[in-house]
Length: 480
Length: 142
View 1 (cartoon, one colour):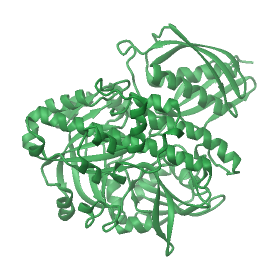
View 2 (cartoon, chains in turn cyan, yellow; view 1 turned 90 degrees about the vertical axis):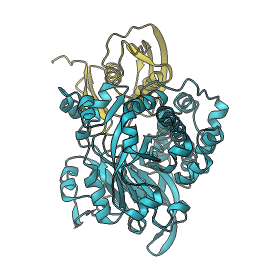
View 3 (tube, one colour; view 1 turned 120 degrees about the vertical axis):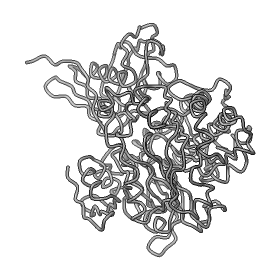
């Protein structure tokens, strides 16, 4: 199906309101990206989101947009508190999938001789792949419920990390309003063995080198310098979140029928924000979001341990502090200026990152003069980016920006391209050490499977919805 | 009339994987889709019917029943690491399903895991019947 698209400028495209749409679509993309996008269903999904009741402003697609389920990946949509809806499909199965970045005081020359051992230690200490978990982390149901309510704070109380870590996590690592009574026994069961695990697919743990600084002032505020070693963690709420989403999709299919909401796609099923179903979903979603914050916090503790073991240095020498932790699959209550009025909106970001500007009260004090850090992973062979949020994002995209590179090849196509190549050896020759539980994952996650993230952040910067601070290059990659 | 063939194939998607199944009956369609799900998780076929689980499911229509069925198999894999070997579908109506699932727990040496499946989605979900031939399409979130 062809979707009507009008070019606004070099990196903005309007999908004009038509048919059942209640608003326009707005997609950030270069001309080349748009040509690619027109081959798949992501644009149709931007239009479908525009049909949902109570949407405020346009249905937005970020430059890393690709087709997802119901909402596109790379989609942002804000909904009015009274007239609007909440949709589990607008958050995704992996609730609060996100990225965190840890700094070190190490220069790459100090780490390179130990890189193989470091990759081995990280692979050993941080469980990845199906069925793998830490034998020394056994949760009772009671403890799991505390995780769901307290989030990363629980982990810090148990000795996993430091209190100051919490200051540098979106929502300080705890989304309010979580109610464990609203999650199923199944979700609790799936979550119990998967807390503190990386998972599989595109999730990863990376040791990176700060290759280039784009903004000296922001880099200094974030504690980044050229030649520095940093660590990126990308994972989410694991089976717990997938189950919460699955359970509530069923609730929402029923609710959409009950409230007479016309759906162009079942996966967009939703309920009014003011309805019991809507409120229950948000309380269950908060549990999953807190699970994910805890997950990344536990992994952080094991990353610090691994560095200490391999490099034989203590925490004071390594200075591995948390730069920031962002969610990129979430729905949140936020206050935004819209058409001159302050509005309380439920902002859905599915494969999109919050990017609050300098001066925003929700930006940590240390970064308030430069903006909220935004972490954009690329692929395992090229680079990732650190950005900060901008006033432009706050005004145009409800304080949101892209979240990653976005795939260009299907898994099958990637596997086909990887055939005959020893991907691990080829990356090792470039100085990138891969440790992965599954060979299929490595083949399906080859760098060529992804868009060049530089093009994605280039569009973001050109559009003014994010500002580049630093480029990171992978040195060691742990995958599931 | 040519006899319909029971089979499934995996569909390409930029980020994920779909399953398309064809069969002579709705019951066989569910079975084929289940084999498709298993093939996404592991390419291993040496799976023994050592354990049996009885499933009873209800849903609003055939499409939602297909999602519930595959979701249940995924849950058995996630919670008990159970890989299905064979199915005995005893009742498969538009809104109700009763089936016996036989299989064995994952043995990583014999059953290398290819991918982690997060969930079974309603995206472009399809179950249709034409002249005695059944077809289904379902996408998995990986």
